[in-house]
Image (cartoon, rainbow, N blue to C red; front, side, top):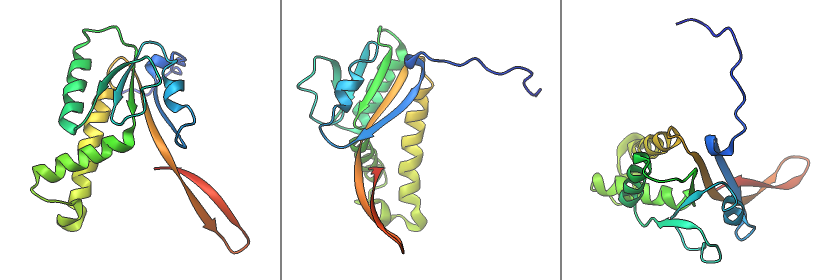
Length: 160
């Protein structure tokens, strides 16, 4: 394989990007996402009732995979897919993996295998969705953590 001789072109079209948006509850993450070009919301939790958007209510990992299959067929004019929220999607994925392995919690499989299976399943689906010719926006909440060092205390916001 030959090394590149030229730089790649910059892509500024948002419908060709993979984006993560996170923040506190009720600050306008979904409202912001509704402004993207032709978004389809994969709604994993309530909270979109104040917006007029195209949405599919996702209540399980299997429903998410079905929605991804329909999106992949390309028989639509959506430009962006918004997972709102990815936090709940992880819970659905965990429930699915636990059910497939007849366990009630990922820690029941030895050596972290349960967590590895969840990570693998989630990565497989998200990577496939991100490879489609649509923008992918993943919405998440954030957590505030108090950090204490030898010299000071401060708050740090991290993705949940």
